[in-house]
Length: 108
Length: 114
Image (cartoon, rainbow over all chains, first blue to last red; front, side, top):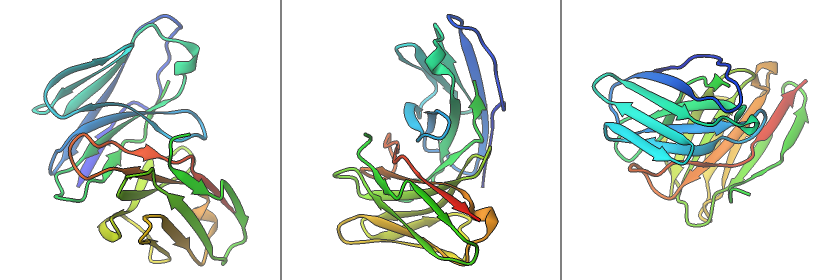
């Protein structure tokens, strides 16, 4: 099975930097995803990590350590529109079944 | 517009009834996934189809069933509805399986059971 933990809620101010952590336990691992979800709307893809290290995409960066079962999403120069839930999701190693298991999300 | 179309957007129905939710994946995507999101809950995986075949199943209730048709659209059937089935139901699609293929989500169907 898979277990994903992330903080329920975080608060930050406009212009600041915030780091949202995610820890996971999984029987297999085939990638970690971050999604953004505004209230009542569909999640939208932010980033993907499968190898250790940092992936940067504009104001958003995501880091992965497979040995620690740990990832974080870093948001810089926060804007009001960044107020949303951020979902960490893991794809287990299940052959051709590629389902993602989501954490409960961090409301920012 | 993400390219994944879900209908209807809203549905209000009574307990004990049956409803069908429809999803058309993004053009070229072969995989369809169904998720349930209850109030303040995470996305719970229900079922996955790939090119018409069931590929993975989550904690989907026996009262729920789904299928993917030859044109790749999918339907989720919910029967003997209970108050606790009230939730947002999302469909997502991806072009393949594994690798860096993330999901593209539809806008969801908000189901209210009264």
